[in-house]
Image 1 (cartoon, rainbow, N blue to C red):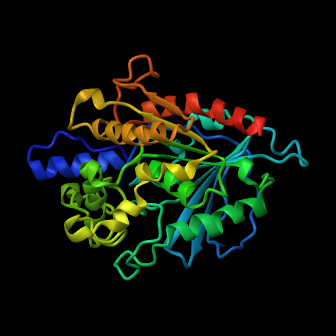
Image 2: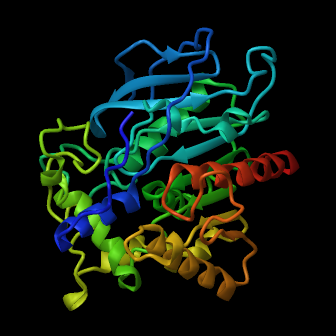
Length: 361
């Protein structure tokens, strides 16, 4: 599997590119293979399978195409161990949105806490290397069609409900995300509150306003592909700093620059200022502090997370907030950074809470 490149870069431009990229992506150590055969799936809702389902009976990948988003797309699905044994039983679903520069084909996205879940299905749909979990404003770029929100909301969710024994209700559906996916989770919950009863963000890009200009700059860095020259001879897809065809900084949300209020679409999409839409929803926010180092992406993530928390406090909404700081006592290997070890522990804390919330509803 790909591993994150070193952030120790000498020049300012290279440092910004590396920090921006690491802020939005993640990697993980090697995983171990399972056994039996996965279930079959039927095409529908605009999704066409292009390859056989691969994996085991409880951890497998479905590969599809859709007119909404260019290219092939992987959807990783994790079933509870008793799924096959109880043909009359239905399960709630947790949609986990991955970070930038990753792909559900990566087996390490099946975090231990997810595979240990006993009473829910987890679905990890492709969000692109920098899809940003939204329908791009500009569909006429070198990246081709980029209607990620249409893909996930209008196609993946009903596709899953049609092919698996899900509860298929708001109370039986949650969305969460890591890094770029943290933005996606809040964005989808805010735009589609009738679909989800729970939302969680793990080291998420929770603030796209100019209060967090570094995070906005990181989004722009993925679009303009500023780090690609650092990949050297690596082929596209093998280098975490290469996000695909270079597109305009305006491609997703329009102009990111606040001059003459040109950035109003970014502010409209900013999760931290629209927390009021989450009324009645279970909300969880996790962050570290990057050990206080501004060159560590989690340093900026922490600030964004606290902006979202401040808004929830002002609204007097209940929520579960964890700032594990430098990671001391927060899982083996977590040092408060933007890393797999910290997110693995986030999920260890969150998944039992989510399963309990599903059970109580």
